[in-house]
Image (cartoon, rainbow, N blue to C red; front, side):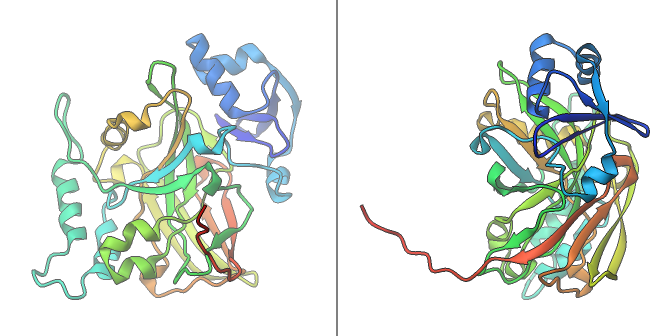
Length: 323
């Protein structure tokens, strides 16, 4: 079962090939609040509300009419965050970026990866090791599928990271409720990150896109997708990517715990999009993304493919004005 949302308002529920508008709600956020308030699952809430007309979901996506599958009505209460070095094999690309000048021969990236291998999948009642964590921005940075991912004019790079994101709504008592999972492009500046690992935080302050559909229910253990870059209609780079717990060094429960253990992230009504990391980067293969390129991430288990063109912000001068 999948959820998607129209930019013009309206929520779509898809089972198999049949996609229909849900009656009585204008946004997925409203639907999730309703489900939490009634103590029901999303599926049961949708069944109670009923359906309106059928829609052609691929056509809506092609026309650019689908938004991110969930948004907060106040972007300041929507948080885009993520975690890295969580996938088997994910250390190699990161280690290559951070190995220059390392005197011990073992980078911090590799140390963090090894910590995840040893303690990222704790048993019942055990405390797992915390992963790397980063902040990308508020809902202002959430870009709809099909819309441009824009690099700031000072960026040294802007390229894709194909990931799975969990989407969560915080209930009135501070309980995180997982709405579902979506494809995500965790757009980053890898050249800036490579200068110094302490620049990782700077490199992540970029837009991100997720959707166009939200998988409602459990995440498959083994997810197989592909990431590609299209330039002038031709694929200049393409590579498979793996996700799901079978291909990860951390459990989802461990990643969720180490995000929501902070009371700051359990404020009632807030929306969280938490990206789970990747092991596949075009940058690691020496590819440089250019404005006009289209980044495409496809994993059929997560619904329709996520596509975004790349653009670059115009040069501007920023001056702080004293009051």
